[in-house]
Amino acid sequence: MAQADPAIIARAFTDLGAQIPLISNHPTVQTLDQVQNFQEVRGQFRRHDEQFTQLQRTLDGMERGLDEMRREFRLSLDQISRDQTLLPLRLYNASCGNIAHLRYPVGVQAQAITRDNLLTFTVLECQQLAVALGLPALLPNVTVMDRRKQIASYLGVSI
View 1 (cartoon, rainbow, N blue to C red):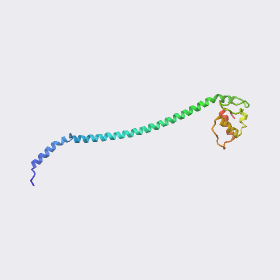
View 2 (cartoon, rainbow, N blue to C red; view 1 turned 90 degrees about the vertical axis):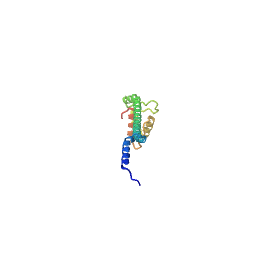
View 3 (cartoon, rainbow, N blue to C red; view 1 turned 180 degrees about the horizontal axis):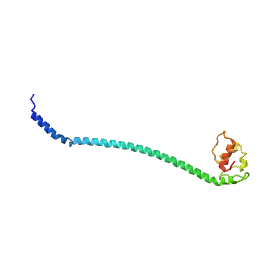
């Protein structure tokens, strides 16, 4: 085997050293840099997508909360409207005497009663009148006096 000439080897290393700064300008190195930048951008996109998804969930939750608040607000307005509709009737019934006939809301077909009659109602009579007035049903173990109070309160009568 032939012996390598140290001068040739030194010249080869010198030439190679002169070309090292050119490596960063080589298209392959630039392509690798672009791929790395692309991967960073793709990672940022994934993070933004995750943030967007989380933001969408948050907004969906807020929208459901607002819908629930709107529903409750509408129910409250409906209740206020019903109470205002009954206000003249309740004022009349509150001011009439014990033997004057009580007034019912428009459309309610029930027997004419006085405040004194209401105090003598049985459980069955209270249940029938409560149904006619559209009042919520009470539990079976509720006393007859509590049933009378439910009706009296609705009609604006104190007992």
